[in-house]
Image 1 (cartoon, rainbow, N blue to C red):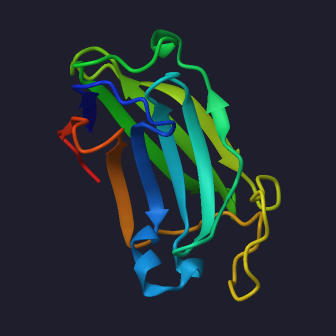
Image 2 (spheres, one colour; image 1 turned 135 degrees about the vertical axis):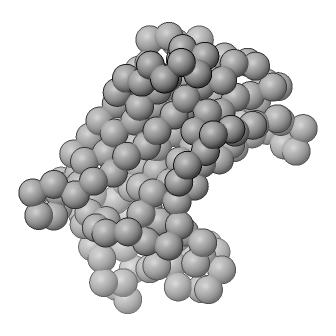
Length: 172
């Protein structure tokens, strides 16, 4: 899809955010073991792309990996204001238990000129969470997230309700 900001959004994690292979919508059920996902973000202030893996999330505790960060040259001063940016986040399983993550951009104003700006291969035991996953969960700190889950999302995190994040041509 395409996303843009209409107002400045100085919140630390503001930006274009995408989640795949997610059961994050189950946080409210109280079983944080089900709320796992891969997350891609383009940070509003820095213009950096990042990938994160979350393996546990309840009302109080979040267990996620460190971010894998990549600079995006044309966004070195942050995301542009009032310009549509095409974003695609792809996760696919390769070689058994490995998962490849890719972030694609179209900065041509909607002319379908996509290019890959970031990628990462998640391998079992090599991209661990920064704290232990609770023992009641079946997944461990370095597990990959395999197969489809219930949710995926494209969303804006902004400063407050006055921040205008817009999306168009979204396909999930």
